[in-house]
Image 1 (cartoon, one colour):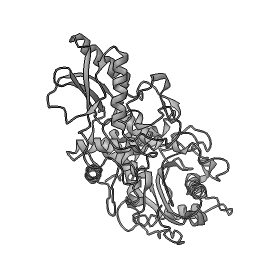
Image 2 (cartoon, rainbow, N blue to C red):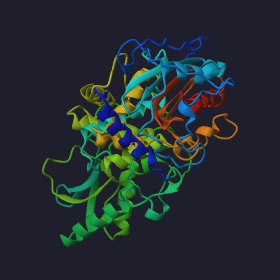
Image 3 (tube, rainbow, N blue to C red):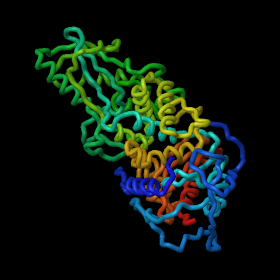
Image 4 (cartoon, rainbow, N blue to C red):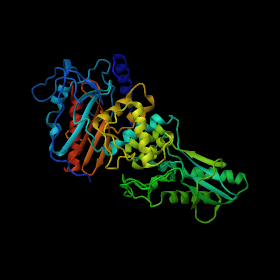
Length: 499
């Protein structure tokens, strides 16, 4: 599907361009079995097809364990720093299965990894190169968000934004209608932070204060200075709480919330405390802003049934585009936003906006894109669910699909990936003490962590300037820091491979 010289060159150029952009910003231990890499046959295959074996061409090393580079060409990309160079993609060649086997050596047998499933593929062609148990489903943790992101971007137009609206009800009554935007904020624009960094105009969230200002202006123009306020959360169906809800890593999943249901919207914590009733918090916030605009709000806002179809809209505010939301979701591994994005996909696919409906929408769209789904089980959009299962081969295919020239709408999946040692959930990884610091700045990857589970899936530029997709999935009872460092060292060996 993605093989062929012309297609390969086009994909390489597109992915290299995407990689050149810099972002600003428990389970039971499965046993001590270590990864046994798949044998290398005479022919390669595309990721997701065949029996998990890779192509082999002559390789070798320098005698000290370092892989030999073809023609001893100088490294085509920097090994340190946050800049991702395009590399010598025009004439680079993908590494061989045998070369990768030699390059990785004992790193894939580190005891800290426990049980390891992994896959490495050529991002330019989608061809599988090397792996172990690459077709065996494993717990993906937050790498599930790659599936959510790809499906949502494929289903929704690039200009799609999530609207929060206010509509007129009976005389003297208005209704605040949740559209599914958890990033709606009550903070002033200059106080909004995403991953600790200020926002630009394109990523700035919608403002509850602005919605109140527009509503007040419409009410005053109609001669109304006093209202009764209700709020509508009928867009979503099914349970409000994730099966693994803990009121920190994720809020109650409702279409109406402000600042993702945080008790303290300025909290820099990755897992801040959340309110019990995000919709009620949002309605109270809106009422407060209305009062500040000179509108009297009678009593406390009350939850109402669905607003009547065709109700007159008084005001609206809209989220950033779906592409920007996906980038934010992936960079910061935002669980609450991931469930909202998954429900937007469900609505686009004419599925119920619920955990179950979102999972059906995501898997259905991935199947339509030709992504291999053997063994895939999804029960949420964020990856918090321990019941989720995805094989490594599917994750690398998702990444290759997102980089394909045929799917420019999926590019935010690549640009949203954290940069090793530089941004998002990778800002504190690939450091000097990890043994993987030479890969800092040239790896973009989605992290995943649950009790006993550490996963990493993304892209890396190797020593020959070739862009590779990888997915590493572990189950271990080792210290999480040690397990993550062991994973990072594998990626660093892939980056150093000119093999």
